[in-house]
Amino acid sequence: MHQTSPHLLIEQLALFAQRWQRRMASYRPAGEPFDPARCAVEPIEEGDAKRFVLAHHYSGTYPAARFRAGVFVKAPFQRERLAGVGVFSVPMNQRVIPSYFPALAPDEGVELGRFVLDDTLAANAETWALARMRRLLRQALPKVRGIVAYCDPIERRDERGELVKRGHVGTIYKAGNALYRGRSSARTLWLSPGGASFADRTLAKVRRGETGERYALERLAALGAPRRRAGEGGAAYIRRLQDEGWLRRLQHPGNFVFTWPEGRAGRDP
Image (tube, rainbow, N blue to C red; front, side, top):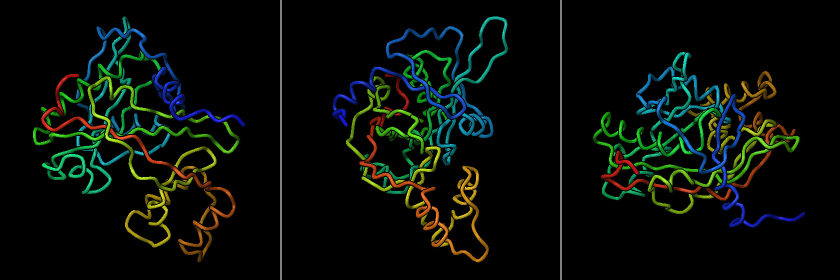
C-alpha cells in the first residue's frame, strides 16, 4: 500500500480546519472568510464548558481546568448559543512548564487542554477566538506567563477502519504566533473499538489500583468495555481487554508542541 510521506501529510492537513459535532470531526477549508460581527468570546462556568467539551470532543474527556472561555454566536432572530470552548488547564505534570519556560514555576503556565469549535464556525474563527481567549486568560490569571499547546498529527480510526478524526498539525497555533518546539515523547496508546485512546499511564492506574482508577474504569465503561469479572484483579482485567482486542495498541511518535513565549500569553497574534 502506498504510504503518504509525513511532509506531504502535514501540507494536506494544513488545508483544513477541524471542527466537532457530537464527537465526530468535520473539516472546513483553511482561509475561509469568517465574520465576527455576531460572535463574542467570554469567560464561562465550569459546568457549561464541561458539558460542551464532553458532548463534542471525540475523546469524551475533560481536563483539570484553570480558566475557560466560550465562543457565543447570535444569529438574526435566534437566541445566542455556545459554539466553541477553550479550556486552559493544568499540564500533565509539574515538569511541563519549566521544561519549555525555564524561568517559570509550574503554576505560572497552563496548557491549552481543549479547544473545540462546532461545525457552524468558519475556518478563520479559530485564530480570532484563540486570541481573545488568551487576552481573557491574562486578565483572569495575571500570574500565568506561558502557554503550552499540543496537537496530535496521527489520525484515529475505529475498528472497522472508518476515520474518526484526521491529524492536527497546529496551523492555528502558527497563525497565532506560537513557537513550534518539536515533539513530545513517543508513547504507547490503546484504542477502543470506536477509536478513543487511553494512555498507558491511565491503564496503569487500573492495573495497580492507584489514584485515578475509578475515573479510568468509568471511562472504559462509558465506551462499552466488557465488565470486570467478580474477583478479577486490575492487571488481569486490562490484559483481558488487550488480549480480546477490545483495546488496540498504537505506537504514537509524539505530539507536536507549540508555546506562546512568557510575557505574551495574552497578546493578540
